Image (cartoon, rainbow, N blue to C red; front, top):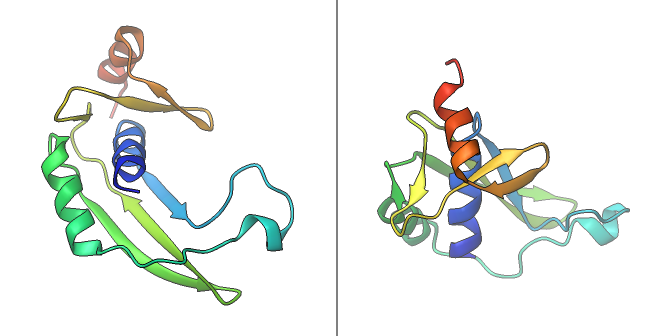
Length: 116
């Protein structure tokens, strides 16, 4: 979950921010099939520390639990302030439409040229 959270945080940080919902299957129809919830409770303090230490520049994220239909979902709110963001190992992603795409040279140029 840490790697996915890191990728999603960087991706949304390089866009205009947003919220990731963990515990929902993508591209699935029907409440019972799509909202599966989490059957484990990650250590949110440790997860937040991992994200803080592995994203450059530092990216503020906030976690929140949400109960929906008796299922536990984890929300990760991403609040960008100074993109571009990458992992400390140099990997980056950017939201393009509904997808996170690798942060290539042309996407990086678009990000830098984007008006604030």
